[in-house]
Image (spheres, rainbow, N blue to C red):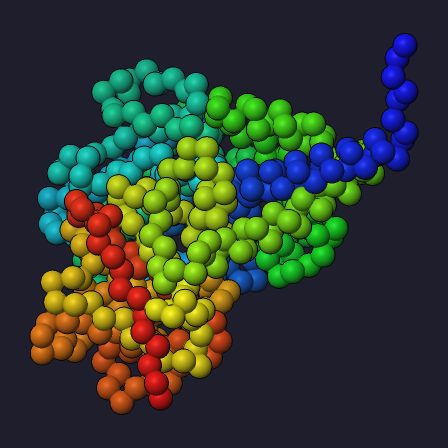
Length: 455
C-alpha cells in the first residue's frame, strides 16, 4: 500500500521552509554578482549621486584622491588615484597597457582585475610586469588569440564582465602631477575588428527603479517583501549571462529547487506562493546575517582579513567583503584590518575619544605603504572641516613621541594638539587599516587596540 500523502498545507509549509533556506543561500552567494552589475550600471550610466565615469570598454582616470563626496563605491581608500574600466569581453578581446615602472621609480601602483563575482583573479604591476611597460591581451572564457597578436602576454578572464581598478599612490598636491603622469599610461584598446560599448544583458535589464533607488532599497531597511523580488529577479538575469565556476554547480542546482534559475526572462510572480514567501524570509535573514558580520563576527578590536580578494567557496566572506569593501585586493597584494571595537570591546562612537599607539619598531609591516582610514556608519568617508580622512606613513607633520612611538587620536572634537588627529563623526564609525605589499611574518603582528580616553 502507498503511504497516505501529506496534506496540502503541510507540503506548502515544507516547501516554504526549503525556500527560506534557499533564499538565505541565494543572497549570500549572489550578492557580490548583483553588486558588480549594480556598480557597472551606475558607473557606465551615472546617477544623481555618482556621475558617469566612462562607457563600457573605456578607462576613466579619477584625478583626485577620494573624499566624502565620492559615493559610488563603499570604503574607498584616501591615498590613491583610481583608474577604472568596465570591460565586456563578449564584445571581443582587449589590449591593456601596463605603465613603465622605470619611468616612475618607487611609486606604488597595481592594475587589479576582478571577475563578475568580485574575485581579484589577477594583479598587474611592478612585481610581475616588464620595467619598460607591457601590453597584455585580455580574453574572455573560451576566447581565442586573434591572428597577429600571438606575441602578447595573455590574461584569461573567468567571466566576460571584468572590472579594472587601477590604484596609484599619491601624496600631497605637489605629488599629483607625477602620479597623474603614470595614470595616463594606463590605456585600454579594442582589438581591430571587434565590437565595443555593449553592456551585459543583466546590466541593461536593471530596471524597475533607477539603479540608485535599487541600491537604497536593500541598504536602508526597506521591507524584505518589497526588495526581495527585485533582488532575485536581478540575480536570475545576471546568472543568464555570467559564467559560473564548475565548483558552483551544486549551489546553482540548490537555488533551482526554489525556482531561481538563470533566465533573462525570469518572472517572480510565476513562482508558487509558498516559494515566494520562503524566499522573502530567507532574504531578510541573509541581509541581517551579512549586516551583523559587517560589524565583526567577534567583538575583537581588530579583525584582519584572511580571504579578501580570493575566496574559494567561502561565500559569506565574499558577500561580506562586497558589502563593506567592494573591490578588495587579494591578500598577497594588500591586507585589510577592520576596526569596529575599542580595547574594552565597545563599539567605536564619536562621543568618546580614542588613541591608537604604535610602539617603537611596531609600525604596520608593509613594504609599499600603510594607512588607517576612518569611515562613517554609511561606509563612506566622513566629511570634516580639515578634510582629513586617513593617516599613514606618508602623512606630513605627524608628531612622534620621545621614544619613537606614533600615537593617532580619534575624536569628534579636535584635541589641543591636532597634528595626529583623525576627525570622527558624532555617531558610530569604523576604521580600515591597509598594508600594501605586506611583509613576511605579518600574520604574527598584532594591530594595537584603540584605547578610550577619559575627558
